[in-house]
Image (tube, rainbow, N blue to C red):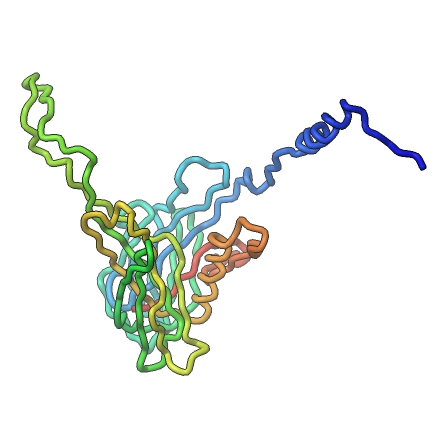
Amino acid sequence: MSHLRLGPFLARWGVRGLVLGLAGCVEPYVPDVVEAPASYLVVDGFLNGNGVTTVLLSRTANLAATALPAVEKGAKLFMVDNTGQRYALAEKVSGTYQSDSLVLDPSRQYQLRFTTASSATYESALVPLKITPPIDKLDWKLDGNTVQFALSTHDPQQQSRYYRWGFVETWEFHSAFESTIEYDYTLRKVVQRTTPIYTCWQTQRSSTIQQGSSAQLSQDALTNVPILAISSRAERLAVRYSVLVSQVAETAAEFAYYDLLRKNTEAVGTVNDPLPTQLTGNVHRVDNPAEPVLGYVGAHT
């Protein structure tokens, strides 16, 4: 029987050399999509059946871009119902279009139609106007070191079934030190501070997609749906805090669109997450339906 014995040098450095060799095989991979020059239209907004409709038109940018996405200025927008009635939207800020405050007929269907400054015409699919029931209760509780916010809602007409929520947080906070004096460059001396800078406020809109469905339940009701969780030690809870929660009722198609959007944007990055898939909304270019357009225009109160 023969034995193979590693020499001292090989035994000490062989494994390290193998690891270094494997590391040398790793090269950065930059897919072609990062530098892709495509600029597709993005439609962000919904048709408000009881108030002002706001729609933002913008363009996609490639992944390597450092500037903000370009907005689509100079477009002509209209809400149109299935009887042909039209309601105009005016450009209030570059790329942002608003209607007058309207109360729409819930028995009709609605769509968004618009023509860009380059004379390209787009329209969304006709959708029913969903009547959103009110939020029954918004509650919070302390769970260990976390403050949990949850809501309950129901539709006695059994017509909602699909829900989406958003929220806006506002909180007061204080600077670490209080300054009562400042230097006046005109008088060239230190004076008492007249503008308070110790107390500050911050407002932040949610960027996550939160939905719930009662489609599989006997009653159109959802109870204690988690909306937000914050560490009890968070700065935003130290002085004063408020959260404004909004709710909309959706169609099944709109719910499916936002669920896929959530999976594509939030549930990626780990081995077990689903692969990103093609996201198709309900907006298309009239003379070129094959052109990709991002966005889903629903109608709800």
